[in-house]
Length: 324
Image 1 (cartoon, helix red, strand yellow):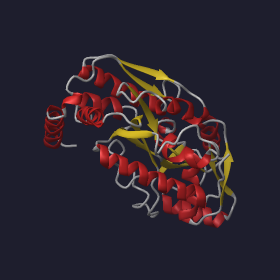
Image 2 (cartoon, helix red, strand yellow):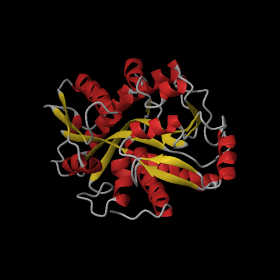
Image 3 (cartoon, one colour):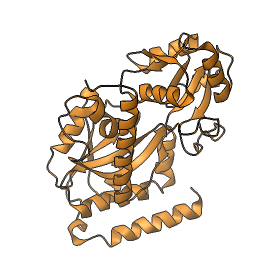
């Protein structure tokens, strides 16, 4: 984002806040609660705390972060869905809890697409296709050629059916038309260790857990699963640039509210988050953990959520995964 565009964006959001309906003029008048459906310290939690700190400064009221974990994030987001829609309870969810879980869990305690209101995206973190330095492939095209030659002997890391790491691998094998098997791990760390050792050959993952190993020459980043190059790793080509069009795997982190939350308050929060993403200090806090800030209107983000859910449903269906 250029200085001029950042200035224009900030003016626009300030003006929007100034003309909000009277229902939001005295908002907030008490502390705001943000529920995070994962443990403290992870990337979703970092995004939530960055937004919470900015909203507290903007609104002049404390913002309390509550981590409520379990059931793939469903426990925390169910609390959001069932909270009073008064504009004082929100949740920060990743793509998984909203656009993927409905298609991998047989029974959901809430309907993410109908019981929650998309409020504002905070940012997104792309996944990257990463391979081991143990095999002779330095580009995505070379890896695909190598995988075809090996014909079923290569495999990829999965963190369980329906995880974005697993679905990223599934999407890669289908688009690249290669025969590779998923190897299940209980966490990213053991999978990445096996990748370094050459026991597995590919992972679709965010850059944070592999960055030091890439810098040490033990792993190689082949491509980014984004439509355009990532701002903090501009030297990495997109999958389309590297020869695999259609491969896009990113995770957004966003604020959601219970259904029925007053629209003026939703608009106030959305405008404040967009203002945050035009603030250099706040942006640096996100990019330091490899989150690219996102700024969208309420309606645009709502459309994005629906489109992402439809896309992931198709990927999950094509992968032959059945809800469990």
